[in-house]
Amino acid sequence: MSLFDDAVLVLKDYEDQADLRQAYLEHLETHADGMWKACGDGHITASALVIDPSRGRVLLTLHKKLRMWLQMGGHCEPTDETLAAAALREGTEESGVAGLTLLPGGPVRLDRHRTPCAWHLDVQYAALAPAGAVESISDESLDLRWYAYGEVADVADESVVRLMEATRARLAA
Image (cartoon, rainbow, N blue to C red; front, side, top):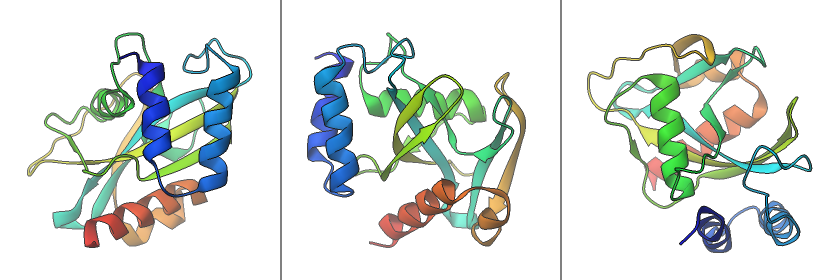
């Protein structure tokens, strides 16, 4: 199965945010290249909020280009077999944390936002950090920092706060 086909299946199975989910599916229906950065009308991206529930904290990156505290994430690559694999790859590459595992149940949220390259139709996952996780700054980041749940709203935008809240709700379920 192609990454494109996986994305369609993941989005069809995603039960929340019906209008946004439908917009993502319509984008893929009309853009055969809708998974790739080259699609100037926008493209699917994958991200992962790295979370350490045992210590009540999340790891955020100070994005080099956007200069904002965000979850790890970015463009899909031809080697990605699934959206989940893309999110896990991005989470691992940008955090430097070995042994991340995605929170079961598929994507946690969707978030569409404008970036310098195009619209990002982000499929957001959560990744659990293993005990003793050690982060390492990547080339795409100016800084990495662990934030207590209560501190996230002070440094990150509403999309990150919503992702953290949705992740915590899924953990509590």
